[in-house]
Structures are given as C-alpha cells and as structure tokens.
Length: 360
Image (cartoon, rainbow, N blue to C red; front, side, top):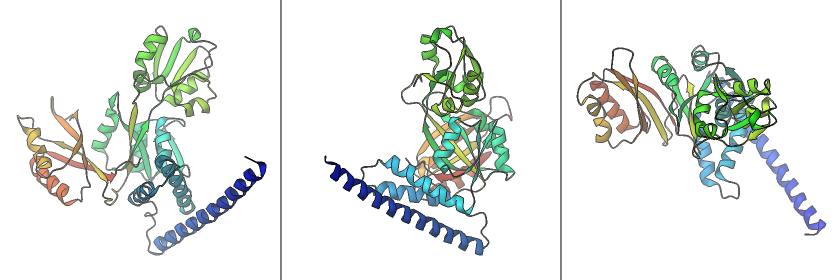
C-alpha cells in the first residue's frame, strides 16, 4: 500500500475520532440533564440504576454488527457510562482488597474505572461499609467453578439487610510470580487459599517441596513475595504488576474453565429487566420430604432453579438453610406466586435480591 493511501486512511480515522469525541461529550451532557431532572425532583440517591445499565448494554450488544466483539462493545460502553455517571458523583464501591485482587477486577468490570475504589481487608468490612452508607455498593466473591461456594459470603448474606443488586462472572487466570532467579530457588508460595487450591496439581508437580502459605488475598501474596527473593505468589497479572513482580509461569490453574462469580451488594433491588435472577434463602423443619415440599411451587409454575446450596443453620444440630438462585425477578407474576406459596411452608424465607443477570 502506498504512503498516499495510508495517509488517506489515517485522515479518515482522525475524522471518525473527531465524531466520536463530539458524540461522547453529547452523551455526557445528556446524562447531566438526566441528573438535573432527578435533583429537581429530590431524587438524590437515584443516580445509578443497575437495571437501566444492563438494558443499555444488552441492547448495544445485540445491535453490534462487528468487527469488534460483543465483549469489546460492552467494555467500551461500560467505561463511557462510568465516566458520565462520575460527572454527577463518583460511585463509592467497597471490595475485598487490597488493590490488585480479582474482586477489584470484578468491581471495575461491573462499574467501570470512574469510581472511588474502597479496598477493605475482609468480606465482613465490605458488608459493613455498605450497611452504614460509607459506600453505595460492595463487591464480594460468592462461588468458584472449581472450588465451590465462598461460605463466609453466604453466612453474611443471611444476617445482612443488604440486597444483591448485580453479579459479575470473571475468568480466573492464576500466574506464578517471583523475583527468584529460578524455580528451584522458591522455598515458599503465597496465595489466597482458593488460589492455592486452584493450582494444587501444578504445585504438586513443579514445586512439591515449597511451603504453601495461605494469606488474605492474591494481592497480599504478591506484596509478600515482592519482599522475599525466595518466595513466589500465585496471583493475577494486575497484582504482579502492582508489586513489580515478574511473572515466572503464566496460567498455572489446574482447570481450563476456572471462573469466579461475584455479587454486587446494595440497599435496594433493581426493577425487572426481563433478564433477571433472584436469590433467596429458605429453611423448613428437618423432616422427610421437607425440602421437596418447599421446592414444589417452583416446578408447578415452571421456574428454573440454577443453584441450590445448603449451609448449617446455626440454630440446631443437623439443621440446614438452603440458598437458591432462580431465573426471573421476584416481581414476575409466576415467581411472585411461587414465593407466596413457599412462604406458607417455610420456617424461613428471605429474598436476598432480584437483579439483572450478568451481561456477557
């Protein structure tokens, strides 16, 4: 291709960029007008609407003609919406820290980068930060595809007044990062207990004699390894970059499909979008057929249950509560009827939230 042809294409790209710049700022101005209307009506807290954001992203994904992938389109427009929202007021989002954790990555995937990030040292503090109003939203892990449920999150959901307002599904890619000159110089490996479990077979094969040290997060593992030339961390690329820790072996997780699901916590469930999920916890007296009877209304109304997880109730020995995910919103007619019938049978029924399904 001649230099003249390349120059013509570059000029066309420049012209398109100018149009994009103009349109993005027009969108920001329109978002500002929406904020002004809400403020005039006294709706100070109604500036972020998860249902509206999910609807916009799904519409753009479905209308995408390419060549950009659907995920690229979702990521681009999420950042545009995040920046526009920050003109009104940056969202305060608490997450399981420190910075560089997979939970932070999930928070940024859901809200975009134009937020006030509040990294905290545990799952309990994330719940408390949102419960007290110090943060509008919180993000916590709830389930890994290979290691199962995060039981601390389930137990905290049972006692908290917060609602689940969204979910994020994140592929988890674990790297071995270290300042050691060679693998045989690594005497210990730091990671979160989930990270160690997800890479157990790899460690057994390649570092069988290294001590495995569980710490509060993969980001903390990277920090510790950065201070110890005889140590390594199993961590994300972001955590390794933050602590200037070279990646020695990439992608060492045992399973090829290693995903973690995160929950977004808020104070009110979003309105229905037509593509929703509802989470609840139920219990009934421990007797034969008790759980089957509780679940019967779901089958009767043709409702799809996507998860069922039991946890000790802490009210009596060998008594359990059951966490359930359902397709649909608690305000959908059939699900509303089913929940009403289940309420009559249950010793406990708590709707943990109805929220848009993860947009991918």
